[in-house]
Amino acid sequence: MAGIIKATGRSEPAAKGALRAFQFDDVGRSYLDRVRDEAARIIADAREQAAKIKAKATEEGRQAAIQAAQASLANRLDQQLTSVLAALSQAAQSITHSRQQWQQHWEQHTVELATAIAGRVCRGELGRRPEIKLQWIREALELAAGNAEIVLRLHPDDAAALSSHAETIAKQLTGAAPVKIVADDSLTAGGCRVETQFGSLDQQLEAQLARIQEELLG
Figure 1 (cartoon, rainbow, N blue to C red):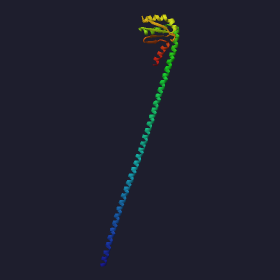
Figure 2 (cartoon, rainbow, N blue to C red):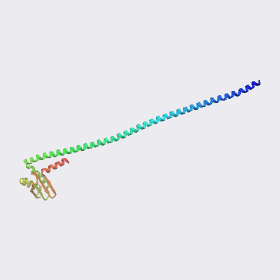
Figure 3 (cartoon, rainbow, N blue to C red):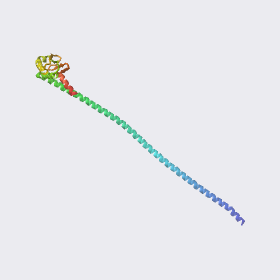
Figure 4 (cartoon, rainbow, N blue to C red):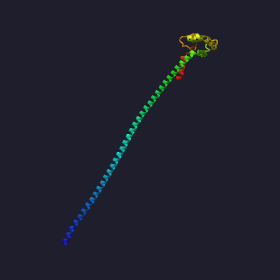
């Protein structure tokens, strides 16, 4: 009986110790597993966040690079467009200036040509129609009427041929004012020049054509 009790007394502590060891190892492994799982989850989350951050940074960098490239391209295009517009404006101004110069040249050339043709025709008419000379003398004296002293200058040939007619016209237009007729070989045939104390009026053909040409080109 005593042996049985001892045996029983020896066997109980051993059983209890084995139970305690089993329970501690089991709990420890379970805790370590949870720690490992949690650590793995944290690492996985961190990796996922890092991947997202990296992807976002990459996308933002790509977008920033695209925007920078677009801005640079737009700036370059603006500069080129400004240069092109300036060149076009300068070309347009040059064309306009050249056209104006060309137009002025041909207008002047045309007027000069027309004046030369008119001069030739008028000289031919002066030779055939002496009354034209008298008409010019009349027009000049009409403008000089009212002056105290009047000098009528004629080409020597015209002074010899038209003096009497010129004197008659002068008396009709100027009344009592004296008119002095002077033969002047510096004048061209057919024309005349009237001088007063206030100025002179040139009625030579060349002078009349020059006034017409100046009016046309003015």
